[in-house]
Image 1: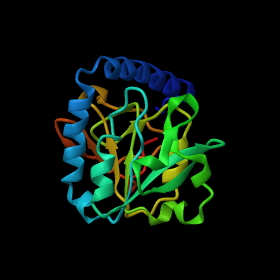
Image 2: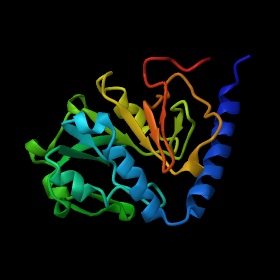
Image 3: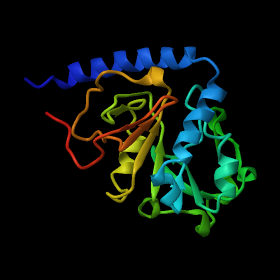
Length: 206
């Protein structure tokens, strides 16, 4: 029998709380994040991608900002998201100097650059998307903060674009409760492994 929406929401809430605590307790976040990003950058999916979206880390997420200079120097087109009225917009990042601390002390594109037409990137042009999250499972199940920003963005990505989630191993759970609007990752990369998920080719069970 299918779990009710209230039951699923409660299970996700408990998992989020446990994952936040585990992530907070993660030792050497910089060093472990470097291991994770190195693993990502050696993936064939990353090597073959011309346009790559990186999230810019906040709080206790796997840290990406230390890998951005290397990515920018690689010749790839690097894109970062920022939030406007509950939606993620995409920005072509060419230099770390184009970022500044915004609301909630989140590093994001400078306000005066966001209106530059050449800086705006349609999600359909992304060849690989690096996705944050709070908790994951080895099948690519993911839960974020519950606001759906990434779900809304990923709905419009090309079906062939790999979705690569970054996580500390401590953020993995046996199973993340998934609903019809939730999107499975193609890969979940931790310091230990690159787990191959279900991606968008299968629908979550009811």
